[in-house]
Structures are given as C-alpha cells and as structure tokens.
Length: 275
Image 1 (cartoon, rainbow, N blue to C red):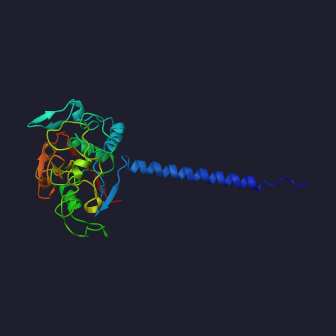
Image 2: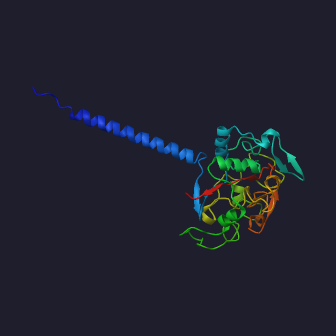
Image 3: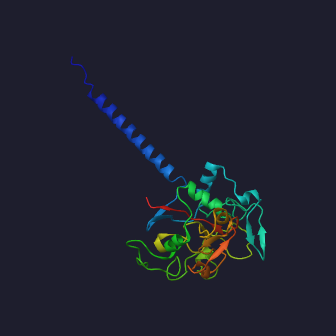
C-alpha cells in the first residue's frame, strides 16, 4: 500500500507559521503604535503640526500618571480651586474628580498646572503649543477640502466658525452648553460645568472645544527672559471656558495665569510636529 502523503501536514504547518508570523507582526505594530502614542491621542493634521482632536481627557492623563507616578499639585494640596467671589480650594477636586466625584474617562482633565500639562504632552510624544501655533489651529481653516461651512484659508472670529453657537460657554453659545454640561451635582456659583471632550460639534480644522469648555495652557514665555524667569513667569491660556462667555473665545483675548494655577476650568491640548 502506498505511503500516505505528508503534503497536507506540511501545508497546515506552513499556514500555522504564517498565521503566527502575522500575529507577531500585528503585535509588533501595536506595540510600536503604543510607544509612539502612549496616551492614545487622536492627532489631527493642521499645517506643519498635528494637534490633539480634543482636550486632554481624564483617561489619557490617567495613563500618564500610571506610567510616571505623577502626583499633581491639586492632589498634594487636598484639592483644586474654583472662584466663588474669591478663590476657594475645593477638597477632593482634582483631575480625577473635577467636581468632587469620579469623572468619566472622556471628561477633560482639569485642575492641571502648566508644568503638569507640559510633562503630560512630552510623555505623550508632543508638547504644549506655542501661542501662535494654537491661534493658527483654532481660527484659520487649513484643511485641503474642509466640509461646509468652512473654507480653506479663511480665518474665523471663533474656533466654532463665524459664530460661537455650539461651544461650551456661558450664556452666549446656545442651549447646547447647558445640555452637554457634566457637573456631577456640584453646586456651582457660576456656569454649568464642562462637557465631555469631543461632545460638541467639530470646529475649525475639525478640532473640538478649542473655544469654551476648558481654558488650554500654551507655552509662551517672555522672549527676553532667562530660563529661570521663563519658568516662573505667568503662562497664557487660550480659548475661554464654560465659566466665561464668547468674548474670551476670540483670538484677541489674552489671559495669563500663574504657572502653578490648578482650577476647575483649566486643562490642556497637545501638539506634535507632523510625522
């Protein structure tokens, strides 16, 4: 009787080896992607940069904290601040608990000081934007074929476009601000709280909440200062927040704060050089 052929066995072995090789390649690609983007940021191409599609989220900041062991100033102080006819420290209000109770993963990470925001962005493979970079991304449409009503090359008065409607701001941005707000039952002296990152419709360059929701730190040190003075100098925030109206969302509104400020309506957004 003829000896049974071994061809099927060899074919099966080759198929298994190919599948194993493919799985290893996929695992390697996933590991490389994770190393390149450890925070899991959704990067949007804007001119020569890539800009985070949303403000830094609680989930993204948690990955940073898990990897680095960072303890924020607000945590060390027992809580961040809010303005209630004067600055008030709110016990337990931190990036994990912006209004005193645990936040959802998609809420913006607030109560973050400037150096904490910069450290997060560097760990995430980027940095905080310079002021001019932030302004260009927020107000000037740079996509080759943007969806209506946006037009390539046009500079808008608001990050949302011609009008502030749809942003998360106080009074001027329509009912959506109140409808999307997440305050977790906190009794706020002013405003309705922030919305989840990415909850409002995309604006200029397809970015979410560049206007309203949370102020965003930008890295704009005085040009004539030495390194120590630059580190200690007040830092600029951009875009306004749920605490303010539409006027603070415009490019002409400049507002600086002490670098160690940790309040309920300041967060961050990262940029990186385009890959």
